[in-house]
Length: 318
Ligand code: TUI
Image 1 (cartoon, rainbow, N blue to C red):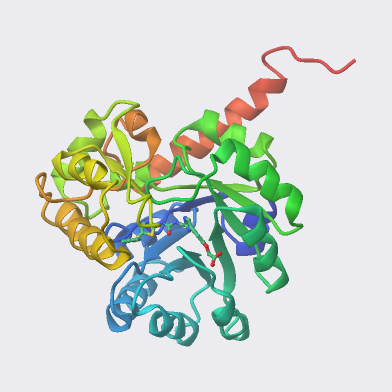
Image 2: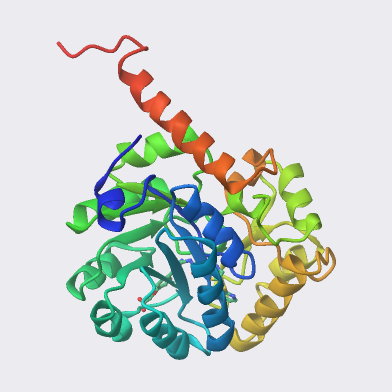
């Protein structure tokens, strides 16, 4: 088994996080990943605090292992969700789409490990100074809301900028990606898109089917002009949004559209109006399988690959 500073820090078996995907990462999926030895995350997305609290309470009944909550900082309910995480003494909080600085002391006081998702070395440094236990460095290969830098460029620069452990995210879907992340200096990986197709994932069958059929170039980024770029599967809606890119639409309008269309994708499988967030590795998603199988396949083959890179390929060090 691969043991790193991340497995030590969190008391988990595998250095693998499941991304806190909006509407997809519910209590069942998070608990299934944690039960498999990874770190399951509940995605709070734009849900009200009482809904997130119910998911936390449910996850506690489904697993004795550590799990976390991803707090989406652009949510109108972010402050209340942050408080619920502290009250519930959630083992780990990750954050997305903003700077969680103002909640850090509250979480630390509750004994919660804080792992902000960052898209730049500058924010990683600020988070380390504010007391973060680790960071997730997320490249723009990811699905959903993204930054500018690729995983390949971002991870080593974040690794050099901070002394806390770094988890690599964006574009990782198999053992080769995990091995590459370790080569870049990461102590763990976060995968999102592959878990949309976990058996426990509540995503609509249409969403899973889109992923199973996707090719390498089937994702598109919309919303750059409004300041909230989002990567999702190419559909009628996202092609239309991409075309509107040069026209003036407000950030609020965009967010409303994105929030509504996200639910329509995940829950209703609405191929006309849904926004099916997904990463550039969508073309590598080939199976619907229990989270346990996904975790064990990924980590088992990563261990083999890392060993074979040195032993079986006959590399020697003179
Ligand atoms: O947050 C994500 N991915 C997401 S959030 C989301 S839900 C949503 N729905 C509608 C509109 C917008 C979002 C779907 N996918 N990933 C983590 C992430 N964080 N990626 C990039 C960032 C980020 C970007 C800028 C973090 C901080 C930041 O600047 C903060 C600052 O103040 O400097």
